[in-house]
Amino acid sequence: MKGIADYAVVYDISSDKERAKVDKLLQGYGFRIQKSVFECRLTKKGRDELIEKLIKLDIKTGFIKVYKLEFSSRKYVIGKKKGEDVDKGPAFVI
Image (tube, rainbow, N blue to C red; front, side, top):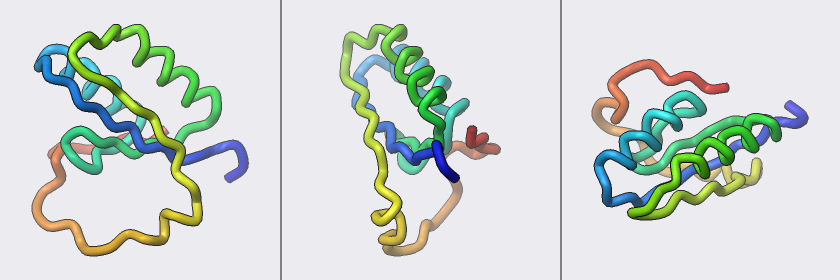
């Protein structure tokens, strides 16, 4: 779809409270790949909105990075996922 891109949002935050806020916010925008990595499919407006909300969290004990994923790199997924999903629940992709 034109105007929509995939993003990886990664974070390394030492405060449980701050990490929980980031986690809760990201669950509304994408799905968890690893404990501190989410994949989000967003419009430009959605991306800008997410970044604005992440900035407003004012994280003091770590960092958050948002990477745009290139379409050509998505075909290189190697291996199969084993076990339950980390989220143990439904994911909503906006």
